[in-house]
Length: 497
Image 1 (cartoon, rainbow, N blue to C red):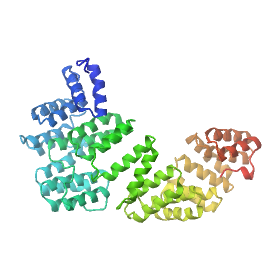
Image 2: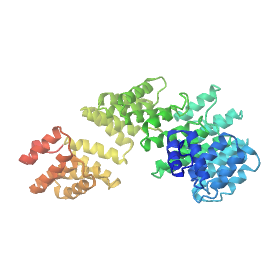
Image 3: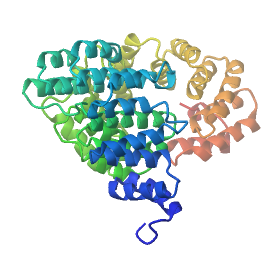
Image 4: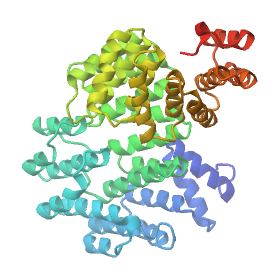
């Protein structure tokens, strides 16, 4: 850009790279070059809008919104932008700007959210809370974010009682925000300015774009939200998620460092950091952070579950089972994580660690709590098939799993294998063949199919299936067993587990 400041093609690339890197100054320079060349993209317009808002140049901000009004994709979104600018400048009725959006379903949920947030920012508490109520009825991440943002805004307006009503419940972010309120600490993430309102809009827009399997298209909007509201952890969390999804993992980790340690969403930050450390190959660092988080005073079930997951990945099954056990003692009936999930995870860790007698009661507890979960039915059923225990009952379990999830190759394999072990090989083979097509690189499925073929005299096909299993298997006792079958044929000692 310095050598060719008017090169529009270079500016396009520079804008994308600057936004991904979080270089606001370079992004603004590139966007201005594109504007002068008459090639300003929507991303460039939003970059210039963010710059104008940061500089409190309301006239320039209005001009950029007007330009976005001409964009066929983003014109539906401009009522939200206009509403927050009107709130800031007090030149127009902010709420009336939202009415201009009409009833378009594409933007309906955005309009509903920002109407509630604007009402609260305008001091219309009762109307704002009424508008917010249907948006926070659930317990998902978005509902939690809106609760905390609204409570932060009310706290700034010295309406502590109303803020407290929004922070009921035991979800970690909400509970953390409630503790901050009780300690008279400012809750971060209030939305009471054009800058913070539009940042919230951009963060959600970025997340929604990423949800359409296009994280690369959302990175720029997420970064712009961090420029506008660096105090809002949601902006950094979304930016980090999208950077990680586009293989910018080191940059994604750096984005998390911008979030203060005491933020209400610190558990989500810690979870993201641990996952990113593991993804970048720093498994020891990930494990150390997860252990520290789980073993601190006040740790919750989610933190112990994350630690258990990392132990499982490291094949430390004893430690994993202990971690999941700790999670179970802390888990609430409403979750997350759900208690049936924790019983399943603990049972799996015990089973993989060679402690079947302890694993089975855990798996049965998961089944009792969640009898309609295919993963539970399949795990409990297949684990018994492997050990040739209760194979008739095990067949019933995997059959029900298959009914609930008929297109899952692993479950189809389990049912086929159960039928074979129960002497119904003619019924088993079509299922095992279907499973092998669905998961062509799964050695266990091909080995099962080979055993079934061999038992009905289809020896050549059996060896082809075993060869496919051997090609996909790791060099261990499984590969030794499969190789022996190819050489000598199937014997009781060489049967697949």
